Length: 114
Ligand SMILES: [Zn+2]
Image 1 (cartoon, rainbow, N blue to C red):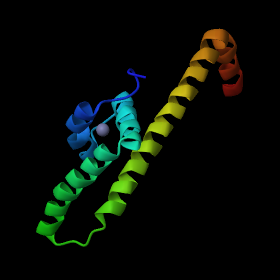
Image 2 (image 1 turned 180 degrees about the horizontal axis):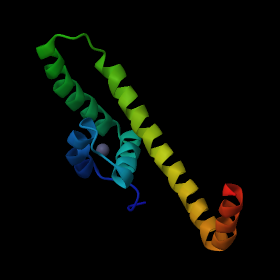
Image 3 (image 1 turned 120 degrees about the horizontal axis):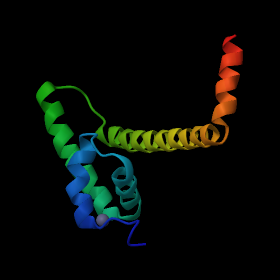
Image 4 (image 1 turned 135 degrees about the horizontal axis):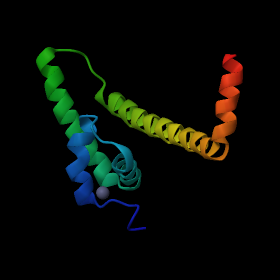
């Protein structure tokens, strides 16, 4: 399990990246996993997000529902990662097909193109 789960210290270091949307790949997956499992860190993200975004919004005076926005952000990350995973799977499938039947596919393309 040590491989999969991130500790609170590491999580805390990544919170700014998460808020700035620069968290990616495996790190993002592990970040979200830890956020799921650890209530303290979940609260920490909320606090940091509220402070950061709240101050910015107060300056430009827009209305906000930051808790809702944070939830959207988490959803977006999850969706994004899922799509990327699916894209990878498709890529692997195509690679597999290419390796096994490259000649066949090339022939087919030539036939289809006339
Ligand atoms: Zn934690």
